[in-house]
Image (tube, rainbow, N blue to C red; front, top):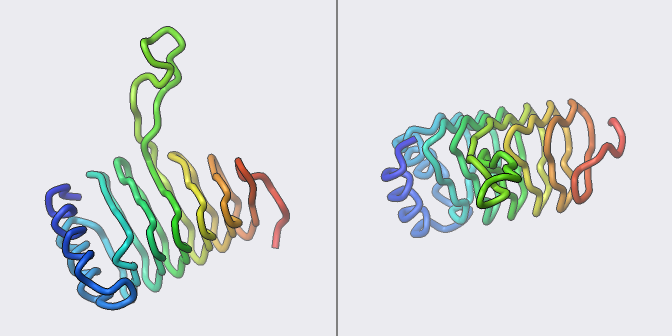
Length: 164
């Protein structure tokens, strides 16, 4: 994605009511280099930054005040619901005990969120995570790694709750 065009897109988003103008927002994100499907609804308060590839499938909802940091590929498939105040970020660091900072060399890992998944409010999806088809990430959860399809996970670092 083009970071300058994303900045301009973000500025224009602020002028559009949060749950209106979805067609205009899709157009602006496509212009910035994102692949946006049909009937994608993104609230104006969503903040998207980075120069990675962002793909959002048809009929996906991205709620209020989400932060999407895209320095590697982020694929959000079709019919996904992302509730308010979630963080989805592809950046992380190597652990470097010998370096000046324990947060050593930066790296970016892709994120995939499968068809029909539901990411509940205040959840965090960490770099390298894969959320399976129709999986649920419970409110306030942190996901690192894989969530299998039809699985519900929840907690400080999300753990298995049950399969649907």
